[in-house]
Every structure is written in C-alpha cells, then in structure tokens.
Length: 266
Image 1: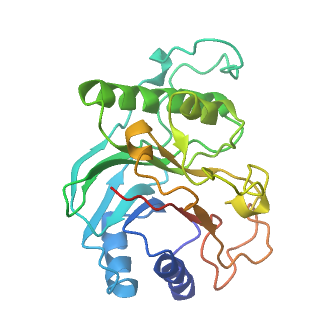
Image 2: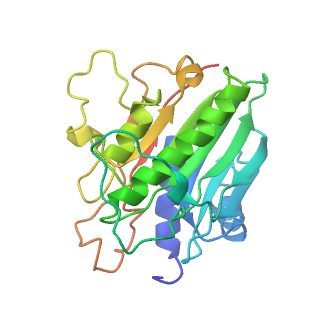
C-alpha cells in the first residue's frame, strides 16, 4: 500500500477521465465505494456520473472493482470464493498447475452490473482485474469461469448484450485471452476495418507502462452489433519514465495503465 493518493495524482486521473468522456467507466484498484464517491464528487462533479458502484471482490489487499455511469445500474453481482478447481480445461496448450496448489479462487472476483440507457438498451458489464504475475494457469481458470457465467446468461437470453472490460494481465496471444476470443468475444478496441498499423504489436495499442497490451474491451455477438467500427482507441496520459515495480509513484502521474474506449450506438 503506497499510502494516500496525492491531490496531484487525483487531478491527473480526473483529467484523463474528462478527456475520455465515457458514459460508462469500468474501474479497477479502487479503495472503496466511499473513496470513489468522494473522488467523483470532488473531481468529477460536472461529469454526470450519478451512479457509483464499488464492490469488495475478495482480494487480500482490499482493492475493489467499480463502475461510474451516467445511466442507471441494476443487478450488481460478484463471485467471491468461487472454486475454480472444478473448471475443466479441454484441449492442449494450457499452463501446468503447480502440484502443491489445491485451492484456487478468483484473485479478484469480477464485478458484474447491467447498465440501462435512456431508451431502454441494456448492457451487462463485467469489470475485471485478472491475476497478475507468472500465474498463467490461474488466469486461464478465471477466463474459463467468466465465460461460463456469460454462457449461462446467454442461454437464458441469447440477445443479452455483454461486455468484459478491464485488466486481463495477459496479451492477445496468451491462452487466457484466447479463451475469450475463441468463445465468441470480440476485441472491440482492436476491431478496425482499414488501419493496418493498429495491430497487437503497434505502440498505439500498448496499454501498460511495461510496454504491453493487457487491457481490453470485449463484446459478445449481440453487443458487437452496436459497436462503431474504428471507434476504439487508447488514451495516453502522464507516463514519466520510472521503474513501475520498484520506484515510488512520480508526482503528477495518473496510472500505470492507459484508458481505453469504444463507441457503441444502440
């Protein structure tokens, strides 16, 4: 815990959010509902985020997944302490699970909400922050479990619009990311019709200080019908050179991740 976030960093975060100007924001690593409500009131009071959601997701550090929305939010859900050992990994290419591991749960449960726009269009949003570090097997199980939840939702309502938004802690070619892409989810930020420079290795797509593409907006088939092609982008922010693993956070710095966004028109 680096301690309280400085006013300078809060101002930088607010600057990014203002420039992004999103109707729905999926957030990760938030201290609490009270902290997010305070930040929204102090720094974003004119942005129209009337609906503030933040849930404890079972992580030992206490950080949460959250939503800021201009539209009403319903059906708030998390899956803390879910047993991931029951997930079956079919086929090859999976990472070996260490032999001494017997209990596996989400490092941080997804936060799931449904946002209702003024014309009645509904979008179910999973705000996610998957397991970090050299634990690819853990992320693979998390991805499979999340897609199982989505599969159950779509079995009940095949037309349901669903988005996965957040930090996958994995790149497009990693097995845990491929779980989503091979299960019918569309990489909305990368969905371009003509920009050949907008590929997985392009500097324009890197989302993290470590020079990796690890943050995504993924849409299921019904939601992808509302995606505006070529609308996705990565919004750069204050990223001074520093050792993000070991150095203290520099002054006037927003985040080690860039914001990402797409346009959707119901």
